[in-house]
Length: 316
Image 1 (cartoon, rainbow, N blue to C red):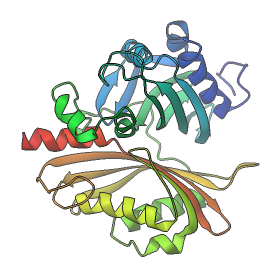
Image 2: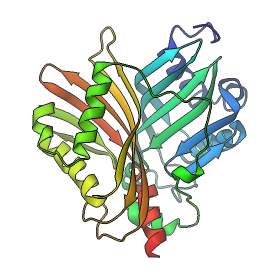
Image 3: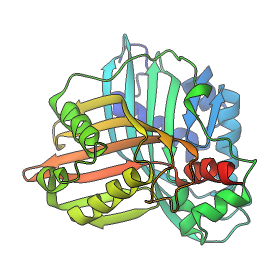
Image 4: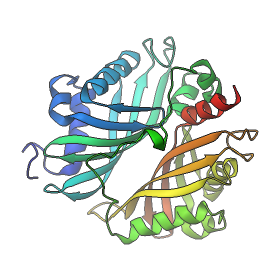
């Protein structure tokens, strides 16, 4: 990997390795400055940030709340080259105990396990562009709260990311040209066109689902409930595909990572209750794996807390 530390054997090893080095090995000073560009751009559903110093501060604040946090890298779906830069869409399962004060309130002592999906652009050993979704709603539920109530209690502390905040970063790519990525992007587009009859055609009937809110399920009914609930809440919102990667790698199933968005109005009954007319931006990332009988695993995240914050900001 030209331009990257020799200790990393490939790009997935780089992503998983620096994650452990920063979070679990507490390399928040020297490691953060080595692996993150000083002007890194970070887009999360609940915030927009710029600069490595702010990322370091946020990392420390999270560790204070969850000091035993372990970040288990499940997959890295990537595209690009070391010379041009590489885009990693990686999936991490974090286990932790809520032991400190912070954004999630006073410590509860409860143990959590939550997913995060992140798209990171790296070149010359540094990440300079990032899109990150943590399952905030799932964390809130596991410590005994409700995402809507949590959003209400933290109004003014959360500034959801919206497209008008965005700036162009160094990464302007759209992914790679791969049949599995194209298949997945087409499937999501058709689902957002309300073609829910597609689910039993495309999904393995024994599909394993992992969705926002720490909701796991098995079978096509779980997928139908999730996708229908989301689209029904924002029936007139515009769906757009932002980034698509597909891969086939040794000892791995065919898989894909798609970053997408919904922009529009909360004008329907669905996953977010009574329609309010609120303008909402939904940032989403989907990872899927395919098997001999269709789509066998679906990991899709959006941030419930950020969505509820936008809705409650409108309704007061």
